[in-house]
Length: 250
Length: 250
Image (cartoon, rainbow over all chains, first blue to last red; front, side, top):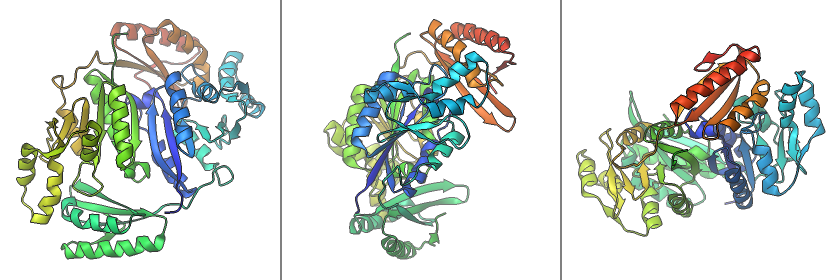
C-alpha cells in the first residue's frame, strides 16, 4: 500500500466520559481527514486533567503524523487545553493579537471580556485555525491541531484545514455490498478474499432489524479498480450462498 | 474525595475510526458504570490490529481498575479480540463448553457452524458474561471485560454486570442548572465555586440554538448535600448576572 499518513484524535472533556454528552466529532473528523488523505488511526477520550492531557499530547504527537484535539478551549476554568499544549511543547502561552481582535469585536462588560480573552491565548510559535462561525480561532502547534468541542464550531475549523497545512496520502475509498445472510455464513469465504488482498481492509458488519438480519460487507482501500474487482468477488460469494446482493449495503 | 474506582473503555473497530459507524456504546457504558460506582476515566478507539490491541490492553489493565472492550468478537476473520486478550495475558484460547452449547442451539450448515464456533473461544481462566439476546456470551479475564460491539448485544452484556463482578465506589451524582447567559459571563465566578469545592467537578457547557444561546452548568460529585448547596450558589450567581436560572438545564 502507499504510505499511510496517520492521524490521532484527542477528545478532551469530562462530559464525554461521564456519558452526559454524545461525541459526534470523531465521525465528522474521520470522514474529513480521509478526504485530506489522513487515516484516523486512534482516538482517545481523556478528562480535563492537565497531566493526562500533556502526557497524551506528547505520546501521540510522536507516534502519529498528526494529532487533532477537540474541547477545552472555551473561556472557563475547566478550559485548559491551550495551557496543556504549551506545557507539552515547553513553550509560553502568549496573547495572539489576531485572536484578541476577533474576540474584542463583540462588546462585553470588562469581567466578561477578561474571561473571553482567555480564548486568545495560544502557545508561542503556533498559527491560528480559522473559525468560520466568527468566534475565536483554534490553533496549530507543529503537528497538533487544537479545535473547539462544540460540533458546529469544530466543523467550521475542520473546514478550514487544507493541503497547505496537512500533507496527506491517497484518500481511502470504500465500497459496500449487503445481503440478508448471517455474518457466520459469509465468514469462511471472507477470510479468503481478505488474504488475497492484503492492502485492502474487508470488514463485515452484521445487523439485526425489524425487517430481518443480515450483513454489510465494506471494502476499503486506495485503489478503486481493486475495490471494484473485490465487490464482484463478494457478489458471486453472496449469490453462491443463496443471497441477494445489494449494492451500497442494506 | 472517597477512593475513585476507575474504568477504561477500549472501542475496537476500524468502522468507528473510519467514520462509517457512530459509536454510542461509550455513552451507555459510562452511565451504567457510574451506577456501579466506576468512573469512566479514559476511552480509546483502536483499529483491528493485533499488536495495537494487545499493547492497549496491557497498558490499560495495569493503569485502571477495570477495562471494558467492545467489538471484534463476531465470527469473521477481522474478529480478533479474543485472540488478542489471550495474547495479552499470555494464556491459550480454549473452547468454552457453555458458549459452545449456546451457539449449537441454533442449527446451521457445517461451514457456518465452524465460523460461529469461533465465538466460543475464550482465554483460559476467563469467565463468561451473559448475553441476554440469546447469542454467544462475552467474557471476563481478570479485570478485563470483553463485550460485543453491536449496541443491542453490548447493552445486554452490560446489564448482566453487577456488584459481584465489579467492586465500585460511590456513584457520582450530578445536578444541572442552565441560563441564557454566555459562558464568558459566568466564567470568572465559576472558578471561585470550583476552588471552594475541590472534590466536586463543576463544568460549563455552552450551547447555541435557534432559540438563543446559553450555558448549562453541571456539578458532579458523590456528596448529594454538597451538590445541592453548590446549585444554590450557582442560582444566586445567575440571578446576580441578570439571568433566569433553570433547574435541570436548558
